[in-house]
Image (tube, rainbow, N blue to C red):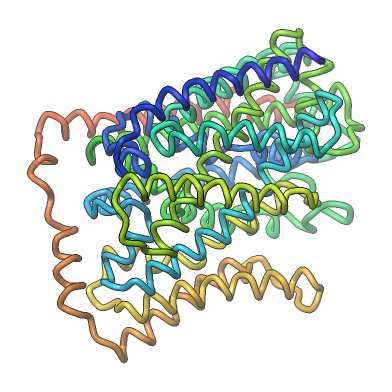
Length: 534
């Protein structure tokens, strides 16, 4: 058994122990679904970042940087990380006020409609199931690669690892294990990048050499590789892609169930706002580190056949054993954190949003765990069909929520005219519009420009349905009352001292952004331009 596999198994056993400890404290549905609504800022930041990052970031997107698109990814992330702040300010804190157990339940309460709740629950089930399958497969491929196990054995090991603590402890366990995983993979990423850049001569020398790298010309240019054998033919088209996907994923971060559901666990609204600001800054820092790491690997080995394995190769061949084990364990932790979040939300949606039963809390807890187990088994069965690319599958699954939920989510808080029928058909139209456009493009029947990405087509279809149907339907009195209640600030949130402390956080975030920009100018922009100077 390799040292890397031993590290993974040891970490999984640790997470199972923590999850089981947390599971003993689960007594009520609030404990299982929303961790008792008492999580502090650190735990919310940990679960926000951990549930967002997965094998897609550490393997798919870092492999994308290895291929020649490091700073194009940073353009995308600079846009999408703003979704944390926008989402918390204009959606997340109001969701918390609703006291819902799930985000689809919030929609059901807001529009006084079980049909709207069921539509949101069904999109949650389909979208997160696809995401769960892709991330599970990515983790299984990692275990298979470093442990020498057959794919099916690796898949069973990964599935059992995240299922064991998620089924028992629900959100109370997920928020604790997510935070531990977040601390682990963050430390691993920074240490791994530091060692790798040191091995390639330091950051400035690495940037200079990559600027003149003939095998992938333009690898560190802001637009990445362009031309005949690249993904995009011109800098304008690559920038368009990054901006469109950045806005889409900003919407995903702002309204998707695996992000906004974290705010339901927060101790108060101040925690929601602080967590969003810290998460945005941390996400940007992590991506800077990961993208630089992915690009730098080219200087040691520019011929890795599968770019998604570039960081794994570096961990196993370039780094000291202890650091390689830490980095691979960190990547696995990122995968497990996303898997546990997706599995729990799938189970919650099936039990709470799609099937409504009149049961006492004890029986509902037992049913939730059984439904979660059944959902996990279905996902496991589907996961035996391997994906062609982790990155592109997760991008498709994630953007379904930008199309189907984006317009409805923000209008549910800020529009007095949106009606329950409009919300229902807006969700349906956005979801189906995205899927239909994606399949037509996949089959080669249409060639869509970047400004007509399937997520934009779905989003426009959703918005058009909402506006059209709202003109011909009426808002009910129940909807008016609920919306008015959302905009009444609870007395508990009127603590002036707490608000003052919260206002310090965005200032720290802005200062961090300025310092990061200055560092990138000094360590990247100047050496890059000097290397290209005649």
